[in-house]
Every structure is written in C-alpha cells, then in structure tokens.
Length: 63
Image (cartoon, rainbow, N blue to C red; front, side):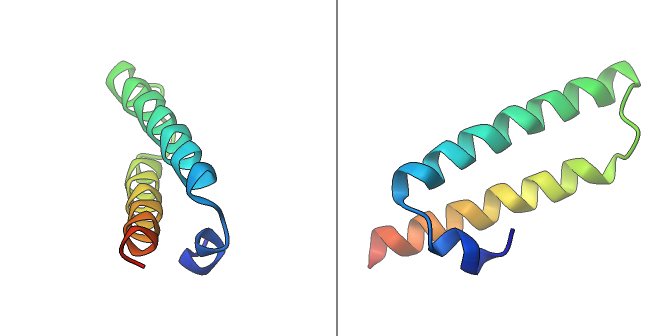
C-alpha cells in the first residue's frame, strides 16, 4: 500500500496494521532461519511497510 492509502485509515486501523506487519515479519524471519524462505526480499519490503505505517501514525499524532 502507498502512504496516501494509509493516511485515509484511522489510528486504530493503523495500529492494527503495524501489529499485523510485525507478526508477518516475525514469520518471515523464522522462515529465513529455518531455510524455508523463498524470497528474502520480502523481509525488506515488510520492514518498509512498517516504517510507512509508523510515519503516517506520527504525522497524525503531530497534526
């Protein structure tokens, strides 16, 4: 998703999205450690999504 799509979400939805993405990141790291991860780039993409959501949350907090 783009940052503009996240900005349309409420704070509660954004917090839920962060939790969901962190759980996904945990799963990806676990798969990497066990050698089951097919695409290691997914970890980077997930980290960036978390950063995008947190940035929008911070913008909403300052507004």
